[in-house]
Length: 425
Figure 1 (cartoon, helix red, strand yellow):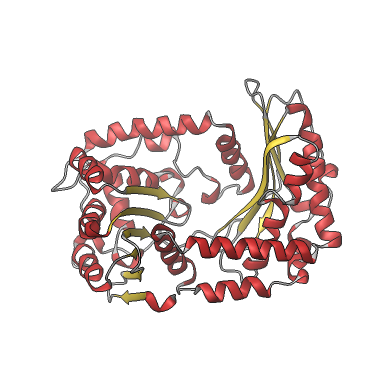
Figure 2: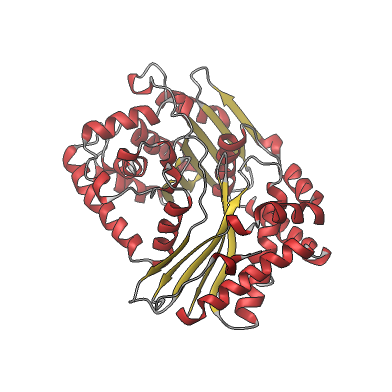
């Protein structure tokens, strides 16, 4: 499968990756920027996300309406997203529209107008998005928890910014930061599907030429590794029927070789209907409809979290049951049956993802940005299969520590108090 992947690294730092999928009629065009919200100074918190929106508002040759009409005419799906360490733009189209889709996205990214009137309108749109987050309990809890978990660090700030910062993003501010972000050594073009490498390279070099004055600055340096806190945060919100809670610990980074074992541990604990948390909290006791475990890993750190939504009066019980499961993993490890089941489930997920050109394009970009190389499916499956019971328990022993456990809860909690002793593992 890796033999279908081609890579071109231009002198100006631009990286172009393609993966040929001759048996499909789709093509996914992706352009990724190696800069995200963690690279922003505090006074510009949210500027990357703002630029992600603003590039849709017109270029030298396309109005905002023209961009919208052309997007619909392509008949596919154009998506844009901002993360902590990258910004991405992806379009999945019929293969005959590859050049047109590339021209549209690249023109938006290389030649945005940042018209002042359009920017003021978009400020209002993003402030409404901020309000939407505040009105969505799971998102709001995640935001206030992250700020407490990564105090005084860009990783703790909201990706979308704040009302105060967003209102300052005028033409000059937006243009200056765009110039800093969108230059060749910061850009990864990743395309997959029924695509040919040479035409993609030609298109990419046309739009992202280092002789363009907009592409003259160096990429943003990575913020210093954050120091995590272990807060116990109880946030009252009386108009909620459910309480929402997060239990979290620090975790491995995205480049840690133990990530395969860590992923399997997360799956055993809380990913799927047979996972421990699902069976213990939902199936056996009916305490929650939504419960599970996940992790977010960055270049230099990560966070593991358990999430559950339950009745306010059941929060303490759900916390106790979750902590008990973490304690069991530390003390007794996992069973051979659990590990083998999760290996099979993970391998199936990897293989099924190969059928989708958008998944493959995203994987190309992610591997390049995170690891600087392409990791083959064969290597991934071999690393998953090689994970041992000891590997899994070693991670649990390292990260499931009482003094590192953080807790956040949101809802009509009637003065609920949870002491550190309750989180002892």
